[in-house]
Amino acid sequence: MGEPRDSARQRMRDAIVDAARARTVAAGWDAVRMGGVATVAGVSRQTVYNEFGSKAGLAEALARREVDRFVAEVRGALDAHGDDVRAGAYAAIRHTLASAADNPLVKAILTSARGGSDELLPYLTTRAELVLTESSDALLEWAGRHLPDADPAALAFAADTVVRLVVSHIVLPQAPVDDTAEALAGLAVHLFLSATRPTP
Image (cartoon, rainbow, N blue to C red; front, side, top):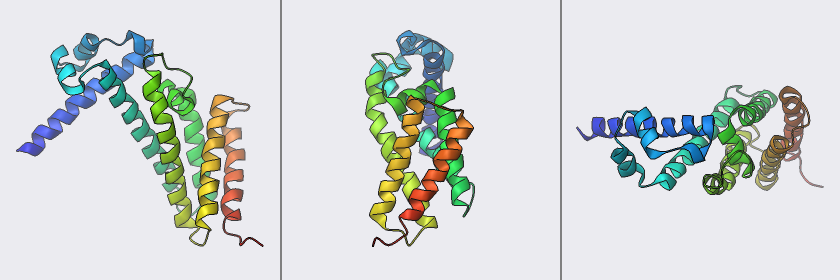
């Protein structure tokens, strides 16, 4: 009996966060009002406060969900191409670049400095290091499965480097997304394969 109730509560929480996200994307976090979020989500204003405590709590939930969703999508893009390392790297990098271009919340999280208001920005900033770490971990786990003989330290450095390069191209894009993804995928493969070669 507890499981359906928990499921219903999670659906309600998701609806509240969805409403907050839609308003944030449309008008910015400063325009988000707990009463307005409640109306869109079909719940009372008190319910929103009961679930999240405050607008700050809602911001935390929104930032956390964006990070979780983004990292899950990166993992999915990496895994969708089987043993084709280059194709997996390209898909994940392209997805990240495109998401940042199309999703102001993802871009704000990844860059920690753009697209967020003063009030929302601290929550996004605290997630920036988390999304870098989790993205690097996802890339490292994926590369480790396909390159089991690679040096772990070299592979970790390669994954971290690739993630940081992708973020730098989000902050200062220099070419179309497809071209940048193609170039960065080639570099990623080079770095990963270098990690499999014994140092002289």
